[in-house]
Image 1 (cartoon, rainbow, N blue to C red):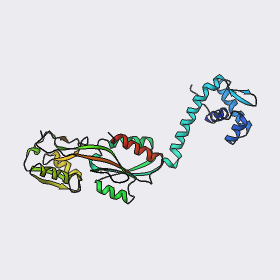
Image 2 (image 1 turned 90 degrees about the vertical axis):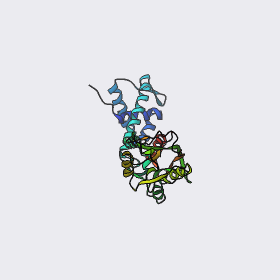
Image 3 (image 1 turned 60 degrees about the horizontal axis):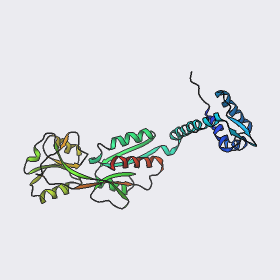
Image 4 (image 1 turned 30 degrees about the horizontal axis):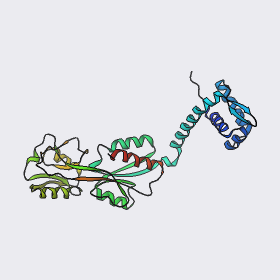
Length: 283
């Protein structure tokens, strides 16, 4: 039948080993010498091994004590980590994360899942909106961390990745062949003006067939083959596909995925979230 080691006794053992004697260890543990000696005795009796022996005015580890010391350190480290994770205020609170619609999938869900597993008491409020609105919220202190899709990066931000913009349409769709080319874009979509300019430069006639404030409306329209759209490479919705247009549509250049972190975001949880975003988007 499995038996449990006494973590209090293990902590006394490790402290004595580090301090080189019971007297100093007792002071570090804020216990009496007799209390520390009793814990060591119980540990030796539980294991049936001699762990310490006198060495001059102090103590030294036996061979069994040397072997136990490594295990004891790891057990105490895990205990302390668990205790801190579930009781330390640094591991609870709220982080407001802003991410543009275009780059939520597929990178963000694994980030949120991993962060929740590591910090179950931290609440992440996700704001999915347009880059300019997210930057406005960030400037007013309403977001702790934001990702943006931009041509450049502002002061205080860092570029995680440059991503090509690509044409997307309905799976098996043909609307990309029509002229004028039928487009579907949100009014605040940051790529809209660049797409229109690229079409004008390539002398491809176009019309804005669907416009909305809602990304769901755009996705539904494109998925129904009523129009085409443009997204960062790697972020194609499941209901659409990349258009293999054979150079009949212009190339759209690249966009930056930028990261902005508020100075007020501190602590281990905030650092981990930023690291996870780096790993997910810094391709």
